[in-house]
Amino acid sequence: MRILSILLLLVLTSCTYKRIVLRNFPNVTDYKLFPQRIIRHAEKEFKFKRSTASMALPNQNKWAFYRGGKRITRSKAPLDKYLEKSNTTALIIIRHDTILYEQYFNGYKGDSKSMHFSINKAIMSVLTSIAVKEGAFKGFDQAIGDFIPMYAEDERGAVTIGNLVNMNSGFDCNDYDDQLRFIRLYYSDRPQKFMNQRKLTTDPGDHFAYSSFTTMLLGICLEKATGKSLNEYIEEKLWKKMGTTYDASMSTFKDGTPMAWGGLTSYPIDLMKFARLMLNRGHWDREEIIPEDYINACKDRSEGKGKAWMYSKGFWLDTYNCLDEEEIQKLNFRKQRRYCDGENQMYAGGYRGQILFIDFEKELLILRLGTGNGNKNWSRSISLLGNLL
Image (cartoon, rainbow, N blue to C red; front, side, top):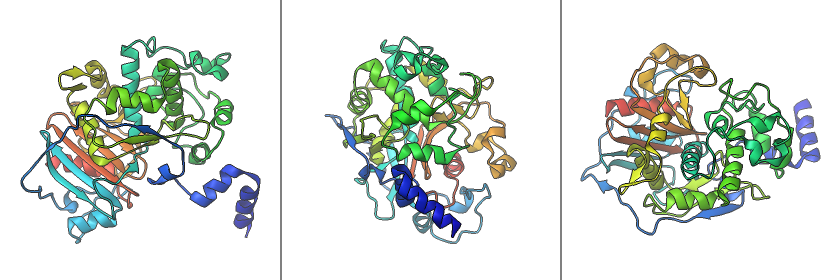
């Protein structure tokens, strides 16, 4: 009874909390809830080659993990049924520019769009590197106070563009420590108020803390630095250059502020083209679109002050081959240690089990999208699947 009373009070006193109660946690169809700004597709479409026969994948008992880290060993379902029951909507595997496996589930098809959540952080990262190369930013050490007036006159203004990219800004908005705080921002009509309330709890650059809020700030800085809306910049610098098939879109708040942390809505095959661009070290048709040295930096597994080995510039590096089984079962990323010396694998990961996996050595790309994670750990599962192929 007390819980119901609290919920009723929240609904009656706050529009934001009312939306939280009514809509619950974010969903891949949330593009329907927010204003959308169009990102137009390429004039010349790139098409992957197709294998004459679909690849026979290993049984899920050989590569899948539950969300808690335990291996799946007794699943009797055929693979397609297993994927369907685990809320998967798309699974695509490409090697050497050839589609080896492409299947869709739960009513989704190749021309079904969805939000990709934090996969967008990887896109934001490489866009920032382009802006630095072209001089829109003076460098990664440029202060965000140059672009966000409310921070210009206090310590928050000293946070740098690099701090936002590397998740060591020091702001009090860590996704893992306070999910409700981020959900409040997600459903807010007034992001400026939320921004003004944020404080620094650590010095910029001192500590790694994964924060979608900082990526939103990065989107604001990109718009101010380039003089273009974020959707226009994505379109110009990426979407029209990598042979995309479909128009995409970027969700915004009602005031036009882009939801840069994960508001991109697009289609599976176009995400694979972004992965191909990364695999080719930022080059497309002999043009360097993303600085090659920046892609190398995205694979950097060093660690130290403000740098966690398992994350670098929008990409996760804690793939299966870098962990032992005991650590995988604990799934405590803050205490994980790395056991691999190579820098051949990375993935962009998003809420509800969106995984865009890249193996540079094998020239292998894997995409898993879904409406939820189905109680599975998809980052470990997809990276182990990649090891087996």
